[in-house]
Length: 571
Image 1 (cartoon, rainbow, N blue to C red):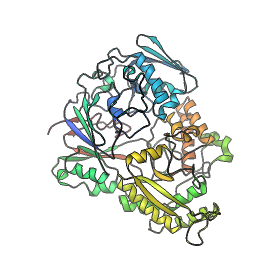
Image 2 (image 1 turned 90 degrees about the horizontal axis):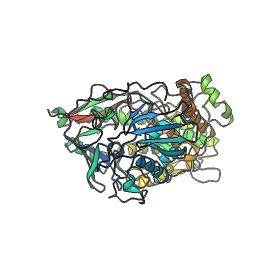
Image 3 (image 1 turned 90 degrees about the vertical axis):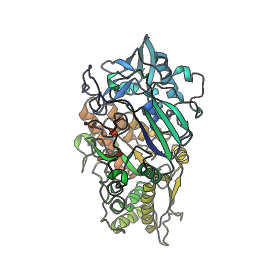
Image 4 (image 1 turned 30 degrees about the horizontal axis):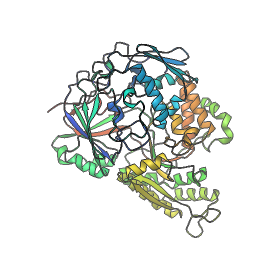
C-alpha cells in the first residue's frame, strides 16, 4: 500500500515460519455452539469459523509480519498502474482445486460475480466498485475499478476463489449442508457430523506445497474441530486430553486454573505470544436504531453505570487493562487530549455534528473500584435526567412515563459474558433501569445479530494495522441499513463516512494515520460500545507435541499462526 514489501521477490518463506517443519500428526480444536452450514462465504447459517482459512485460497496472501503487504498465492505476478485504477493478475499454471481441476481465469471471474451477487454482504462493497473484470491472456485477468480507491487492488487479491464448475446454475446462497464448496487450499473436509464435529485432512496432492508463501505452513495431517455446549465443558474436555490446544481470554483463569495434572506432568504447556496489533473493540454494543439508544446522553449514562474497575477485579483479578479506543495499543490510536492539527482539520467540516469529546478529547470514566460506584451512578443519573428521564418512584421513566427497560443478548456458550452482564444489571437496577440477560443458542444469536434484532449485545470487532474498505462494512452509513453487516450499532454519520474516505484516499502513511486517528475519535466519543478489557499478548495452552517457530509475527497469535505455522513433533 505504501512503499515496497519487506520481502524480496525471491524470498524462501514467510519470516515467522519454519520452512523445514515436518508434516504429520493430528490435533483436535474445540468450538462452542454448533453449525448448520459448511459454506463460510454466505450469510445463511452458522459455520465453523476456521474453514475459510484452511480450505480456500485467494490470488494473494497476507504476511502477518507487516501491515498492508500481500504476496502471490494463486497468482504468480501482479501488475498495477501508478493510479491503481486497475490490477492484473497472472495465475500460477500449477494452481489446482482439491479435486485436481485447474484454477482458471473463468473461475476467478465467476467467483467475483458469485460472491458479489449471492455471497455474504461483506463481499458486496468491493464488487460495487468494480467496473469490469476481463480475461487478458490464457492465465491473466484484469480488474478495472470505477472509484479512486488505492486499496481495491489489494482487496481484489484477497477474494476467495471458488469453482465455476461446481456452482454455475446452482443456488449458492441457500446451499444445503452437504454442498461443501470446493477449494484450492491445503485441507479438505473429509468427514462431518452436523452440529458436532468437522474433520479437515491435509491434501497430500496440494498444488502449492512449494510456493514460497506456503512453505512451512499447514503441517498437521489432520485437524478435527469438535463442538461443545459451552466454554466450561470445552475446558473440561481440554483438561481430559480430548482437545489439543485452547486460547485463553481470562487472565485470572490463566493464572489460577491451569494447574491440572497434564500441566504438572509437562504434557500440556502454557505459551504466551506478544503482539503489536490494535486492541479492537470488545464490549456491550447498543443498537442506536432503537430508542433511547439513539440519544448520546443515554449511551453515556450506560457507560458511566458500567463499573469496569470492580468487574475487572472480580473476574480477572484486575490483571487486564481496559480498551480505551478502537485502535488502542497501536500507532493508529487516537492521542489523548484535544485533537492535533492534522486530525482537527479533517474533522473541521463536521464541527456541528461531532459527538461531545471528539475534538476536545474523550476518556472513559474511571470508578473507585468499590462495588457501589457512587460517582458513576450519579453521573449516569445526571445524563438520564438531561435526556428527559426521571426515577421518582424507583423506576426510570421517560417523559411519557414509559419505563426504561432492555435486554442484553448473549450466547449461551459463554459463561464469562454472562457474569459481566449480571454484574452490570445489578448496577442498572440501582438506576431504576430494568435490564435482563437473554442467553440464546448460536444459531439464534447469529440470526438475530444479522437482523439487528437486539437492544444490547456482546460485541467483538478485531482490527488490524491495515484498516481499509472493511471499515465501511463496520461503521459506514450504508452498512447500517444492510442486514448481515458488521455495523451492529447502526452508526450513520457523514463524519465517519468522510474519515473512512480519507483513509482510503491517503497516499502517505502520515495522512493515513491522521484519518484513522480521526475515525477512532468519532467512534470512541460516539459511545456506541461499553468497552471491556484488552489483551496485549495471546495465551495458548497446548499439548507439548505441538511446536511453533521461534519468531512471533507482528500480529502475534491468530488463525494464521496457530495452527497454520505450528507442527507436530513427538517427544
